[in-house]
Image (cartoon, rainbow, N blue to C red; front, side, top):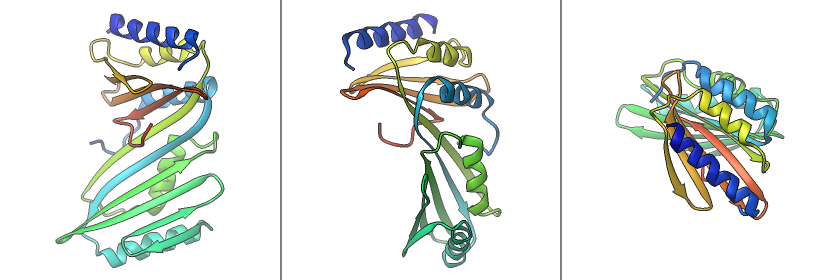
Length: 212
């Protein structure tokens, strides 16, 4: 793992020099540690949380319940037949409903641009609107920021929270991607990309659910 990780760091350094650039609702302790360090060391851009769940509640009732919860938070709300979108100054909500026979599938996505709001805060926001009578739940989260040319410390901090034999490095457009297992046994996906505007790092668990 260390060899692969150091190869990734070497590639990252060279690019910088050239100037181009299913889980239950449990605490991801390793991710929370990484997120805290990320907030301190990177120029925060955005973070987000997605929850997918199923329920036997009717679409009409679940739609109305979530709609009322969003209005209580004084958000600007837009209603469509099978979806709801809402937003405030820094936070956007997207809720989608799909009826599958007697089962209703619900997807809630929250995107945030306020640096003071972390993953735990986003989980609390989701809890305020999602059903308490779910059959199955899956959570996904990510954090994105801009990094400087000498940001190797963040990679060292990430490495401390990964199993040594789990890391896999792959080349992607304009950068590289890492897939690994954190020491709390949760999967993590790390993307480092380079654009004309700079270098960016995005970290997600178990996967990154947005385009980067």
